[in-house]
Image 1 (cartoon, rainbow, N blue to C red):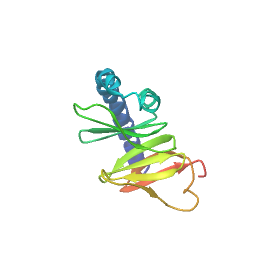
Image 2: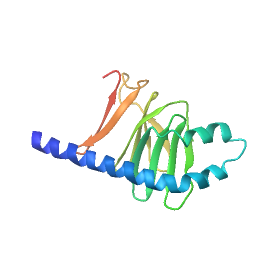
Image 3: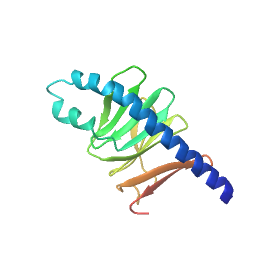
Length: 147
């Protein structure tokens, strides 16, 4: 059991390093083009989210990343797009069984590509700051400041 868990941890570390390196490469090539497309109305919000990535997850050809203003996505060959904004700092994102699980200071959310909904795992996690999310043995785990 301990060896199996160590193997999973090593795999997660390798994947996170790969994600970060991939994201830096992808984001750096399209950031200047995206910056040019920001409208004057959205300048205050969107210009600042592009410089503050707080969490990242990879799935297929899509990169989902968290910002202090919500969730943004980056697909192959497209401009980064802030597609879900809410008043919550995004601290962690995990892709699991075709869903993105998003941890924020307002609780745990699930995004399936079309719908973004709050997940009430228990009353103690409902309004908690979710600091980390991971998957292990077919389950998703969320760590909060409440425990």
